[in-house]
Length: 269
Ligand SMILES: C[S@@+](CC[C@H](N)C(=O)[O-])C[C@H]1O[C@@H](n2cnc3c(N)ncnc32)[C@H](O)[C@@H]1O
Image 1: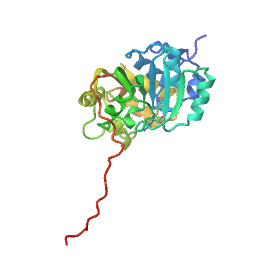
Image 2: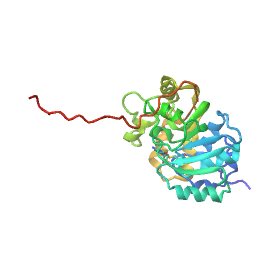
Image 3: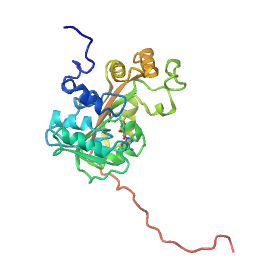
Image 4: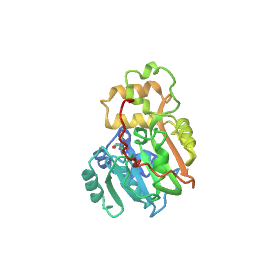
């Protein structure tokens, strides 16, 4: 019997296609299919069984479970906005509670030991904190030298300098300024000096995946669907970047600056 194409089964994402659509939908925490992005990112990262991986901004944890099930890595499923208890239930029900650990934390105040992780992945989340010039140096502290740090998510195929293009204006809002191109991530990370960028690219026809996903799970989101359809990848797409931490020593984080109060008259006497 020939029916409509299954938006959850795709030759481009063979690993993700094995997951139950209802399970994926029940774990949605953003505007993209986190399994597709995790699969695409993992293809460019050395993930081996037993590695300790930080899934930063993992939302409701689908990508963390996926990474463990597909690559045998241990995952610290860390997120700020979504309930850590709901994530813990999902992890438990998936039968992976011995290898996927739900953590509630802010990416800017991570509760981990220096050098603890063998890799960091961040799916559709890094834009919320990672453009801070100091952030990669901060994050690098938590991985061993040589470890890979990878991000993937919605972004721009090229930077928009100047006014927002006419065909994107109905969808665009100020927070969209956090979307960036692979070239921007490459420059931003290389400048930090703490990591060497191995790859920064856009998914071929990533805009179609973005559009397919919106049409499958949020067909009423016509403003975004119309923007993607009109743009056809000229600006919008999925981007990823992978860097390796160098062995350069990192500054210790400043947590307090000791000072001694000295009493002095405020005005000249
Ligand atoms: C668009 S959602 C993506 C979630 C998930 N990775 C996915 O792809 O479905 C962005 C995620 O970034 C997380 N996030 C944003 N700012 C954060 C921060 N400062 N620390 C930790 N997570 C943060 C949010 O909690 C949210 O789950």
